[in-house]
Image 1 (cartoon, one colour):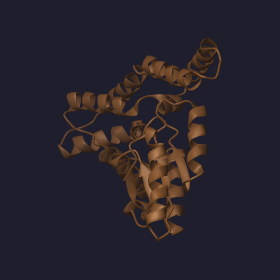
Image 2 (cartoon, one colour):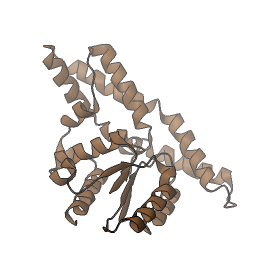
Image 3 (cartoon, rainbow, N blue to C red):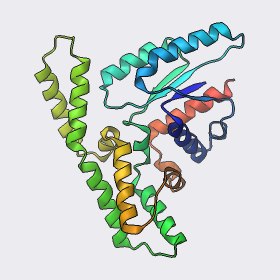
Amino acid sequence: MVFSEGKNDQKIIRKFAKILGYNAVAAGNGITFFESGGFTSQDKIHNMTEGMKQTLSVPFEVCAVYDRDFFCDEQVNDSTRHLEEHLKFVHFHKRKEIENYLLNTEAIIKATERELYQRGKDFTESEKLEVCSIIKNEIETQKNKTLSQLLAKKNEYYKKSGKDPATISMQLLQEFENNWVNPEYQLEKIPGKEVLKSIREEISSRHGVTISDSKILDAYRKNSIPHDMVELVSRLNSFCLSK
């Protein structure tokens, strides 16, 4: 039994599993996904798991996969320790949410090119560069919003600690500014669902094609899958095979 944020998360994880050759996870063999409802569902999952263990005579194990959202590392670590007391394993995405893993420029361009080809249209090098610019611009527009959300979540976590909020904010601001120049850091922190929606709208407006999650994933190269997603799918595969 694996709890994840929602049905779309399950589809994306299973698609990555297929690309990586983990057929058991891709097919859902030996693994059942349930919707958790997000970060605030931790106590619900614990209570549900304990209740089912008492009710059912058949032993079973439970895992949970969560979006990181804008929560600080300290809060994620606290939640992981708490949940690991009751579950087989717990995984928090390194990136903000599952849609962040679809923000692969190469895959988006390839998916766009395939859609245009099916309509008998060319996709010139200048148009490909234009899509690159769209992706970079949409990410950059999220900088201030992302920082404000990270600051809010960190200060909320330390609210009762007695630490000076100004000091906490200054430290995070410096860390954020130093790391923002790194594209990987941007992909970890931004609201991926919102950015992906804007990118789709721009591509649709300019080229008349719709780039779905499935089409982006179909264009994904195996060696481009982020390491933490590879690690998650590998752990889920071991979980399947251990049954």
